[in-house]
Length: 324
Image (cartoon, rainbow, N blue to C red; front, side, top):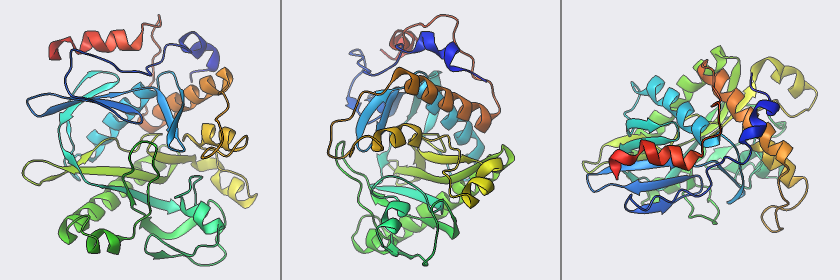
């Protein structure tokens, strides 16, 4: 298992800005940068930016590589459920994919009463809400408790800096956001993907707590799975062996998600209104270790550190030269 001492030489070798002038049609997202090629392909480069509370908090070494390679594992494990957008992987941080029109709904699937953001069901439940996302929640649920059944809690796709807005399934159809048939297809795919993820995670000693999916359509209206799947950025994982004891004691479950940084920030300020304090180097390195450990546990593959910290953008540019 990778330790923080081994990661220390790579602390400042992070991919924050992804500016490649030779590639056309640049779009800068929260975590990923996209370039749209004239032939209908899209190049998606996963940066090392860590986004939470609707802002970028810091940059984590190897985070973009972990996200891309973890998503690759899951795209390959779920291709029989629904087609995905992947065409090629020319670099550890890069996927070349089919350009899609992304549906304007983020589909969040949940198995537990958990979360820290303003749209999480735990935050809303603590505030006294019992009707959320079109679902009724019983009284007496405890933080991090298993829900009576798996649920979908969709939200709008917010622009950078804005907040996602909770939706109910009825609002998606009645509001004309998606046609009824398409929403039914998306819901069925999301639940099947989550079931597959939960099964594989369980075999690897993990609990898949909740996750976010994004879907898009091509020029023929065919629905594809897009963005990422079951990564530490889009999903919450807990360690299965310690969950029961920690839940019984009212303790926070051991996790692999970015609550590791979120918790540190939220303990020191109101992240939606106050300036964010500088993230300590030790926390950055520990977070990198968490991401790498998550990759290794989820995939069963070893994450190998490079002998020398080659600048990430330099390596990506070399691997994408054929697209210039």
